[in-house]
Structure formats: C-alpha cells, structure tokens
Image (cartoon, rainbow, N blue to C red):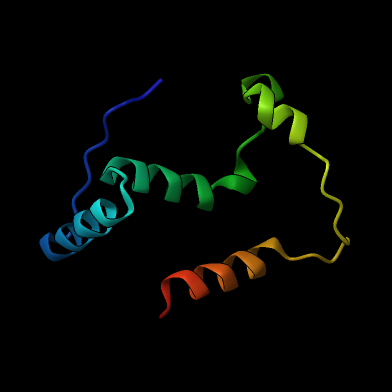
Length: 84
C-alpha cells in the first residue's frame, strides 16, 4: 500500500534529483523509496510470502563467506557506475 509523503528539500537538490531520475527512467518517488529501503534494510523484516515467486526461488542460492561485506561491494559497484 502506498502512502503520500511530503518532504521539504532544497530547490536545487530537487531539480538535480528529478534530472537524475529522468535519466534513469525512474520517478523521483521510486528513487526516494528505494533509498529508504536501502538504508532501512537491516531494520525491516523480510516476509517470504510477500516476495514474488521468482525471488522466492532464488532466495538463498548464493553462498558467501561469513565475513562477506555486501555494503562494501555495493559501494564499490555504485562508485564504478556513478563515479564520485
């Protein structure tokens, strides 16, 4: 269920974010939602029944070492893609 959210953000930041979203073929709402999902991942509980059947089949098939740091890998890949 989607709910409306009102944010107060600097005008220039909004302008730049809208341009970025357009380049990526996404809405600004999608970008904000995905960012919130990313930063709250550790606090949210995964409900397998809410996952699509495709994701349910894939869940758990990748095995990684206990010391694997997905945040480090994600940061590196985002840096490669977007720079800065």
